[in-house]
Image 1 (cartoon, rainbow, N blue to C red):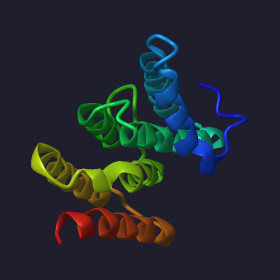
Image 2 (tube, rainbow, N blue to C red; image 1 turned 120 degrees about the vertical axis):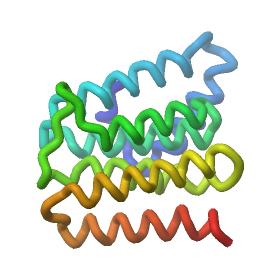
Image 3 (cartoon, rainbow, N blue to C red; image 1 turned 60 degrees about the vertical axis):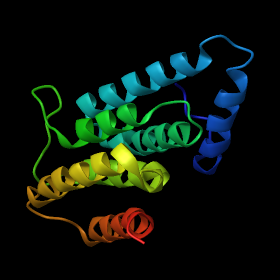
Image 4 (cartoon, rainbow, N blue to C red; image 1 turned 180 degrees about the vertical axis):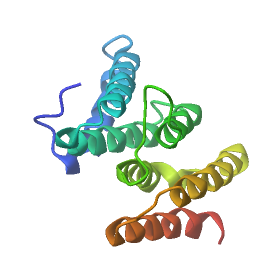
Length: 161
């Protein structure tokens, strides 16, 4: 999916548009999500610094699609675990904190929706794995620490009132 002409602040409107177009164009939501998930995976494989802003937009857009009920909870959690689980093709450097930023972006976008039932349980389990991933990093820049603290406050504030 080409994000060249979509501004970051318009991702919510773009997700709304995908939802509205689904009534008129058959399977447009499936096609958009399929392309988006493929792009996210390929971006993690390549891990190019020049494409990091694009990855952030893609993850934010995925969260907005969840907010508009285009995708379900399982897809969001699969992507969250994909971001923090290095594999042979998705290697992760112990000093690279970009994936933490992606996780926080996704959780800041749709994490407040996981406040009851099985989605709350899934979130709690994920946060344990995320903290483990966080502690495997040898150095965390202060801006990433602030992003994580802000993210945790945002998602746990609503979940534990």
